[in-house]
Length: 321
Image (tube, rainbow, N blue to C red; front, side, top):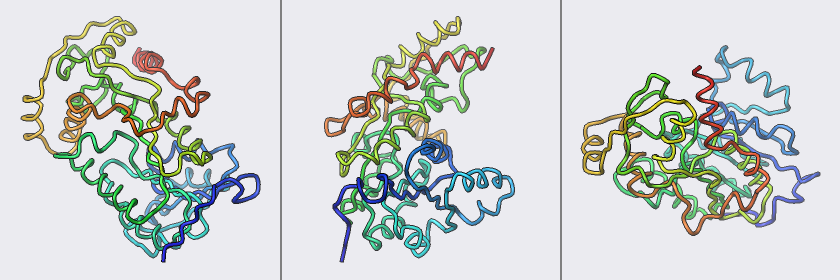
């Protein structure tokens, strides 16, 4: 019998403290979320693979977490028993696994269902509305299955999306044919279609701040949130980079039919990047759907202090000089 609590997170513990379990705490996004919790009233626990805890290269990072009062619980993501043990007494579970680990959430969902007392689960979305691109893209197909499993288990949730990560996408000016960010020597950029489709983009540090703020907000339970602070077309991104860097880029246009052929011939991460391009620029994947709450409206103080697109590109340019 399911026993999920319907009470607000507020008042659960002294000083509005919530007990938060982070899954994927040592990853890129997970690490930033852990940092964003510093100075808050919440009690953090990190679920960590045993091999990570035994890795001497990560010893300093784990020691710093312990010094901050973060509890480290070893366990395997595919072990429901480990996950159930880690979830005992927790109020919130935030999953920060990577894009290629979407299906690894299924044992976690089963554990959440068995424990039954979690007041909020944030799955590892942090991208686009999967419903806008439901076919021919493993990440979105798997993501929709994860969502349905959460809904079927009646687990209280908040789905958070943020469009494109500035650090991943703006460094390439959304040219996902490039494995690495552009440099001052880059001369040509792939432009998707005519380059006039708007996408949302945010820095990972700001995304982490929004995540932390969300768990204090009872109005976001069983809701979707889009971190919608900053937007631009690809042409605008290229224009802004040319302004900031003083360089001039040739724009090589790739239309949908050509992109589809490129996807068929690609594999692994290159294929994933091309699928992101199709999702964002041909299927309107990186915009806010009508049933999403707006983060900039919910938390204008974070928006007003967040990294803008121009600021990010200026930082990128200064790092190359």
